[in-house]
Image (cartoon, rainbow, N blue to C red):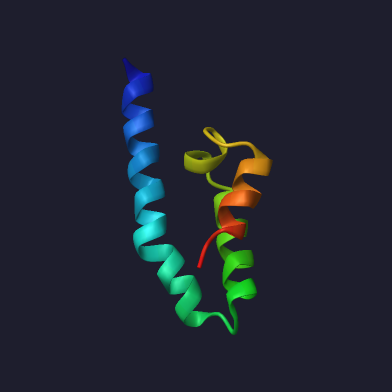
Length: 66
């Protein structure tokens, strides 16, 4: 039972990261590569991402961000 609650929480956290954190990274970084680096640093230290995606998937995901 606890597992589905964690999955919902993680999904909500990832959505919040994309809706709030990623745009903030782009707005405040000097360039897109710096924004991606900051966002990547965050998601590789967040279980909402690392519990569901491999390192390779996270690298590919961030690489596709615009």
